[in-house]
Length: 358
Image 1 (spheres, rainbow, N blue to C red):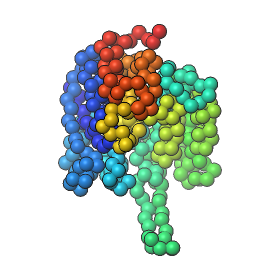
Image 2: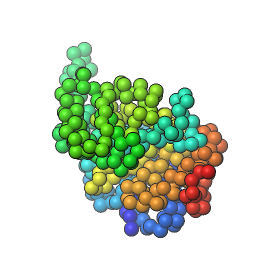
Image 3: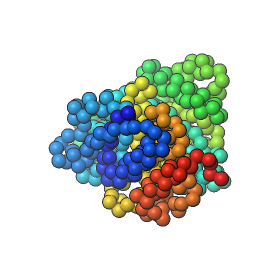
Image 4: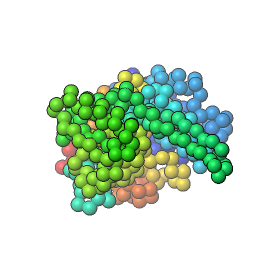
């Protein structure tokens, strides 16, 4: 019996989460596992109503869950940063979800903006350190609002945080058993203190994984090669800030925010899974956004929980939807409503679509 916290959140979050939960029910019936849901109304509406972001009592409840399923956080009437720091970052930090895991995988039938590239070329994972770097909030301002204003934003990197992230990346490459290569993404020529630590740790840990090839590239080169030669990559490991940036590029080359999902992982604790597209408030209530990113996040959650057969079944159902049914993953251009796409995934799960896409 899995206890799953559900945070639908803001904007289109509740719409896509509803489709994910529809798929979760179908998967549990097909693959015979049980779950219990706990819903939480965290997000912009609650903040505007009560002034609360994430109460301590709710955080304590989240600690006791097996996983967290998140829709989106972001409200047009709430100043940027309040909800993101008060909910998203606090959950990541307090629950020590030190890995942000972002698969970048192009499915057959999904368009990529990369010329002459297909599913055989775009299949890698970005492992982003998720609890350190520039996101810790260290720094401050002096003489704010004056011509002499000073703003300092500090990035904090620890040996412990860097090493556990790098080890996760090597273990993941071994588990994927594809190219078996881990690429460190950094900026050693400019950020000499931080990425000296990353590079030394990367080389030391790499010696323990003789079966894994290692590589290094500056973040600007990574961006170029993700566009020109995405087939070069198996697992990319990087810090919080660079990971935040290159995973958005990864989302676009795999077909856009309509299908891109991610996980905030604590390998020994509670992990949180979400579509990465944001709340998209202009589409709220219209039933035009793709739920496949939220359903892909659900698939990641099932895999993390150990329900690997169910996760494969959900992924194969998604693959059939994008190869046979939807015209586009862009809002309003799918040829189906949000709920109809969810219904298609459910139908293919019940049909037991596990024999490939031939």
